[in-house]
Image 1 (cartoon, rainbow, N blue to C red):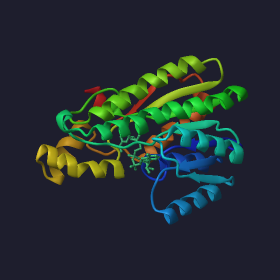
Image 2 (cartoon, rainbow, N blue to C red):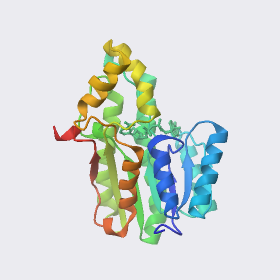
Image 3 (cartoon, helix red, strand yellow):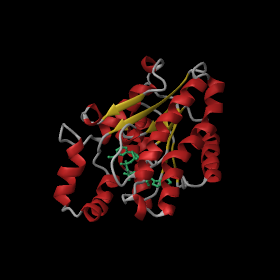
Image 4 (cartoon, helix red, strand yellow):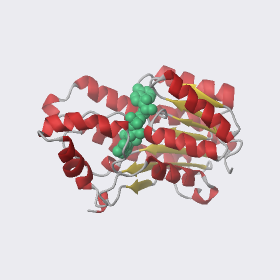
Length: 261
Ligand code: NAD
């Protein structure tokens, strides 16, 4: 359990990739604060399970990542109840699929706030404690869409390219403080986020569900397999190891060969 005594905040960790990060971190003994929305009983069951696995306290925060003041309160609560975060994972994310002339401005604002600005706030608020300790890990979930684009995803692609730039900048700023800052860029991972965009893509491209899965989603992925949340979480765990101390400012691609094309 190499993370015993360490504290981690993972945003957007009530499902999908974020929950997989939380489970991997807890399995290595970290105290974890999870965040996101969903069924209260299911979230409480996950929280209890995380505490059991880690043997350390686990907390849940329902903070909305569109609200900077609430993010500040979330980090303050983590510091008070678990200690300052040693590991901060900015993972919360949403998607909206529509052509630019039909893209609701409020969806643009929400995607930029949740997928990009909340990562900046999380880093801003957690770096001071990391600097004090001379150790820290900031990890953002970017996407293959931090490197390449797809039509009808203007806000998402802009936010994810933004994450790739943010990570490089913060890596330079923190390089001499024992802190690493990296992003992980998965291809298509089978999670509720992907499942939810199928109906919109069916509509915007006039396709059936099977056509969207095979001709749009897996068309980009040479392996013809969805990436798993566990594969992504294993990469995050590696970044927390001392062996990864020199890996900073990197964009780690786990995309079944998508961006190799
Ligand atoms: P998901 O829908 O399973 O999880 C998203 C999480 O974010 C949930 O816990 C949800 O409650 C939370 N969330 C949503 N809005 C929030 C808000 N306003 N405030 C706080 N939490 C909020 O999706 P996922 O696929 O696990 O996505 C996680 C991250 O991985 C996202 O950043 C996404 O862009 C990225 N990603 C996903 C894929 C994929 O194919 N699934 C690929 C590349 C990158």
